[in-house]
Length: 67
Image 1 (cartoon, rainbow, N blue to C red):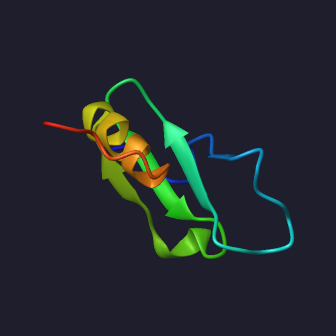
Image 2: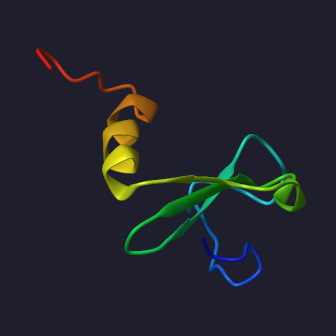
């Protein structure tokens, strides 16, 4: 597992610096690291790219049909 400080974190271009509820991600070939942009020091969640790909449509409000 990568150190949180060695990861390159990204925030959505839809996010602003005025707070709000934003996630940051640090993608790697075998893992996607996710953390709260308001509290980056409390740790992060690590999931597989397959899990991330399954999560994205749900986060966008697009529920897959007939799965």
